[in-house]
Length: 97
Image (cartoon, rainbow, N blue to C red; front, side, top):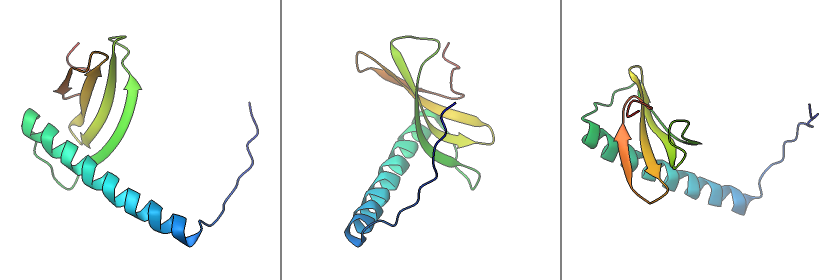
């Protein structure tokens, strides 16, 4: 096991401003992706919904990446992207077989 040292450093003010702008853009884009997925899967979003972008190599299809986008108490919705550029949405993740 590797022993990692704990490090903390303050960002330079210009880097902090850039990180803030990037964070706002990412949240906006993720929200838009969730709305598309919600419309496609007829999902209702509520206060218990969490947005995320969590890509993992699919364990059921070697030519696909599963990307969790929306999680609710009922499960997580994924965008499944295949190596050829096609994709589908599913809830719960892994339900398409």
